[in-house]
Image 1 (spheres, rainbow, N blue to C red):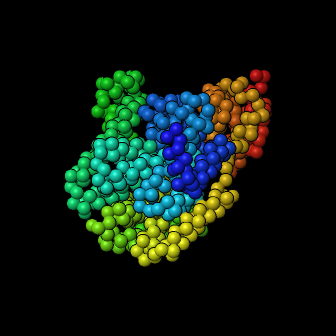
Image 2 (cartoon, one colour; image 1 turned 60 degrees about the horizontal axis):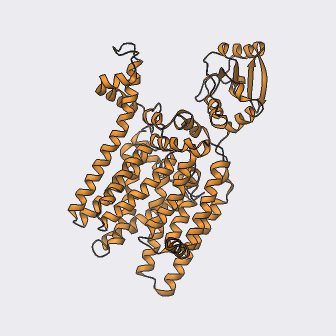
Image 3 (cartoon, rainbow, N blue to C red; image 1 turned 90 degrees about the horizontal axis):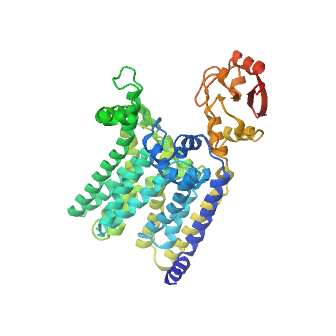
Amino acid sequence: MKKLEHFKANFREHFVVSVFITIMAVVYIITMFINKPWYDELYTYYYFISRGPIYAAIHWPVPNNHVGYSVLSAFFDFLGNPYIGLRGVSCIAAVANLILLYRLSCRFMNKYFSTAVTALYAGTYLVHRLSVQGRGYTLAVTCYLLAMTAMYNICMGETKRRNYVMFGAMLALGLYIVPSSLYWVVPTCVTGGMYLLIRRNYSDFMKLLLASVCAAFVTLGLYSIIWLAIGANLISKDADSVMYGLHQAKIVLKAPVQSLITGKDYMLATPYIQSIKRSECIRTMPEYFKNLFDNYYSYGGISLMMAGVCVTICSIIYAIRQKFYKRNSFFANMFICVTLLLVPIMLLIQSVQPYLRVLSFYGIPLYFGVVFTIHSYCENFARGRMARRITMVTMFVMILLAIGSLLRPGYREPYAGRENVIEGLFKQVDVSKIDKIYYTDDYTKYVLKFYHDVTPTEVEKIESSDWAVFCPEMYDSKYTDVKWPVLYGYHVARLKYVDNRMTKEAEYEGYTLYQRAGQ
């Protein structure tokens, strides 16, 4: 009874944000089931999630695999619904992120400003599009917010062991989920370290450093499992190796170091984010961040870039002024300026410009910085009625901006394209009868697995198949250079074969399903 009363009291106290987050939770759940998954999601489900957590934890064929997310989602897949298995973790994380961001913001500002930060983040196009996708970015942001909360507690003197454990665990899990979490892990560690050093709290600094080092070792251990599996697999397939054809488990036991090194070299030889020339990286960096912020709010790239520059300058000034006499504000300004500055510096040092979705988390320090700067102005210059007016106007403007963006058609655009076409093809036949099949692109087998839980035997030669699915490129005489994930291009002999030896069972928007004649 007391817990119920406490919940009601909290709901009334935080009524506006509670209603907003509840609405967003409903939107996320509906989107999870209504908006069909696209290629990367289906690939993740086909190769990892649907094969169980152990398989997901030890396989890494391409850099685009979010191992940690696949392992956690594989447990959800036991519930029997492919949508929950693929997207359930992301959906929960998306709602949790709004709650965590609001609670973290409340450590520094009142509930109205904190609601403004939460609404701005929820209305971000990139954040919304990733909210329920079966990928690891949204879950990685959850780790980011939990790590920030634990670090804040440590910096404010709550040096309980659980805070250090939480901090280190979230760093390790974030990197295990998505390796590109490095772009928030480093600024988070630097923020906490600098704060404690400047405050001359050397004891807690060493503990925080130890937690970070432990997180690094845990991450290394998690990836070592993958390296051992990859290395053993490669060694067993190497005809020149004395262990050729040997079971992978035996290879790991006999040559663990060789397996580890082989797997590590393979992974590092295929980086997910390719480097570009440093001069090109420097020249195009402003345009890159403009594109990033345009994907936060439509046509808001320039405005958000200017806001980021102004916020960074203000946070540096405030941090210098508040170094010793306002610990809370000093920490907030440290967090803002360190993160906003360090991310582009890291990109320049590495000479990379990753996919924009990698930096979806960057909206957190940016939006927090914008609202916290307004909060600082009210605290230092505006008083009484004027401060209250600014506070309420800020909250309602940010909520209206978020709602207006969420209602835009682009936010509801389908994730899937070709995948929906293929599903339209298979709706015309009984897919349970499909056995040996010849695929002409990777999309088809992923759709069969996700929507129908059917995995017929895949054959590499059409002559060995009983069924064949031809994608549109197969009929295009100009499409001779194969481009993955399309597996084969235009080929006259192949077209003649299906005309003479197979019958057309279904056709839909360029895709055709054939069955061997007489079957």
